[in-house]
Length: 247
Image 1: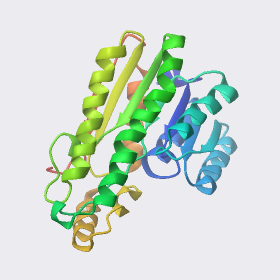
Image 2: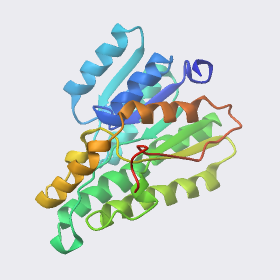
Image 3: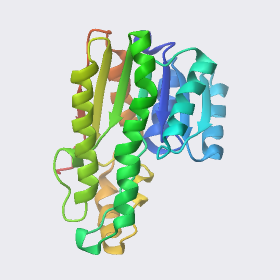
Image 4: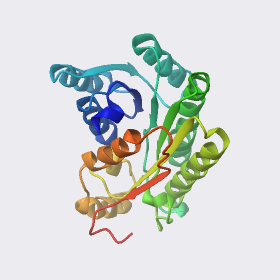
């Protein structure tokens, strides 16, 4: 595994906790140079210090994925520090569960801005570089809710995650050849995602559902598997969920 990952420069959004943090730590341990992007500098600084203390290579930049300029700056930072970008992991996400009839339109807007536009901004930031390099790998985090609508309550969230799958598959078709595209579709994974719901009864249901969650490191290993493949092998989709999860 290490041979396919060692030395690669990997940019990760939503890297201050959960899947992003676990992936940064795991890939750094395998020899990747990781660049963390998230809003919480204190969290990222602690992760970077841990990685460096373990002999790894890491850097971080404050990034809000709802701002296109921030994604451009994150990729530019990676190039300035490490000379290139090999993998762009669009991981930042928000899951705000509530019935559509609650009309939590601001939460709908936030999920669209983070889950869809945040991925598109990450693609826009890295694609010209990947095309110039004639190599690169997009890894976009969708969800099992992007395969089956999580309803009642998760219809809009599912809509955003279906969009990630659709955009990723179109991207693969349009720019494939030198550039790889992988969509990761996790089930219940232990992270802060489960705390994104403000609607009380929905939140209680989500927290109960997440009692079966698997560790974020499970997703990090799946991401590593996609990255480690030879350049002519493109792992397009990985679905993983707790063994006990029926949805």
